[in-house]
Image 1 (cartoon, rainbow, N blue to C red):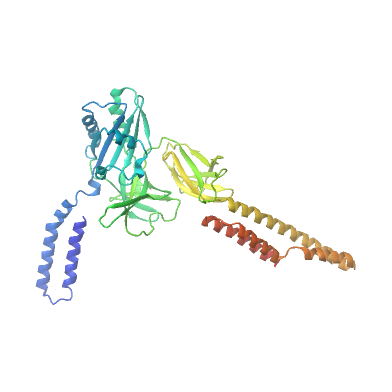
Image 2: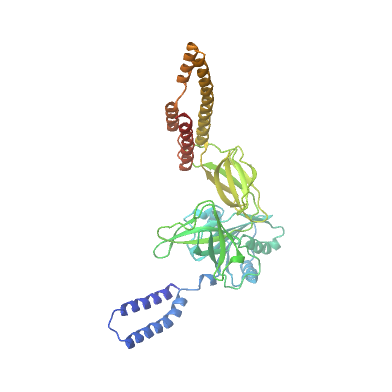
Length: 460
C-alpha cells in the first residue's frame, strides 16, 4: 500500500510542476491522462508486491513439543490437520521437536534474550508444549510484542488423548494481535490481524488488550518493544466501526497513547487470555533509600466509570497483596491508600500475571513530616488558647491594680513563641525532611505550605 501512496504523490508532484507553467489546457489534459494511466497500471502491481494486507494475513505458528511424551511419526501432520479443522485460513502451523540445547533454553524465561533462533523473525506465534506423565504445560510467545505468556497446565491422563489436549490448550492460550489505527485520549480503534479471513470455528476472546509501543528504524526494522505501563484497552463491540474494533482506554497514567514520541513508532495490542491463576501484587518503594517492605497499605477496588470504591484488604507485612482470578475477566481499577493519602491508581485484570511489581512512592518521609507538623499545629492551637486566657487575666489584674501579678502574666506572654520562631522551626524541619520521589516531595511541600498559612493567619 505504501507504493500506491508513492504513485499518488508522484501525480500530485506532477500537478504542482504544471502549475505556473505556460502549458495549454490540451497539454495539461494529456499529462493528467498519462498520470491516471500510470496509476491504473502500477497500483495493482504495488499492492501485489507489498504482500497481503494486515487484516488478510494469517498467523504463522510454530509448536515445540517436548517432555516425556514421545510423538509418533505422523504426529506433526496429525496436529496440523486438527488445527486446520478450526483454523484453516487463520493459522499456518509448523510442529517441531526441539534439539537438546534449544529444549533447555525454551524452559527459561527467554522473552528478553537476544539469542533467539533466526527463523523466528518469520513467525508470529511460538507455542512451547512440555509434557509430564500427568500434565501438559503450554505457554505462548508473541514475536511482535516480545511477550511471553504465563504457563498453563492441562491434565493429560491417557497418552492417546495428547493431541486433543494439545489442540484444546492452544486455543485457550492463544492471544490475537491488533494494531492501533486511530488513537485518542479515551478511545482507540484496533485492526485485528486476519480479521478478513475465514474466522475460526472456536471462540476467541478479544475483549481486553495490552498495548505495546514498537520503535522502528528508517528501514521499518524493529529496534525496541515496550509495554505501555498501567494501561489496558477494553473492547466496545457495540460501538465498533467497519474499519476496526473500538476500545476504551483504561490507564493509571495521563494520556498513555497520545504522548508525542521521537522517531518512527507504532502501537500493537495483544489480547488477554482467560486468567486462571491468582495475582500477587508486590509493592516496592520507588525511593532507592528505602529497601524495606511496605505493609499496611489499604487496597481499594472499583469498576471503571463508577464513583465508589470498596476496601478489599491491606498489604501484608512483606508488602504483598493476593488477588484471586476474576471469573468475569473484567478490568478493575485499584486504588492504593496510605491513611487518607492516595498513593497509586492503576487498572488490573485479576490473574493476568502471577506476580505484578507495583512501584509506589516511599511515603515514610511524608508520614514523618505529617506527624511533626501536626505536633506543631496542636502546640500552636494550645498556645493560642493559653494566650487568650492570659490576656483576660492581664486585663483583670490591670483593673484591680495588681502590679506584680500583671507583670508575671506579661512575662509569660512574652515567653510564648511568635510567628518568627515557628517559621524558624519549620525551616530547620524542612531541611531534614526531604524525599527523592518528586511526588512525595510535592506532598511534603503542600503540608509545610498549609502550616505556614496557619501561622500567618493566627500569629501575625
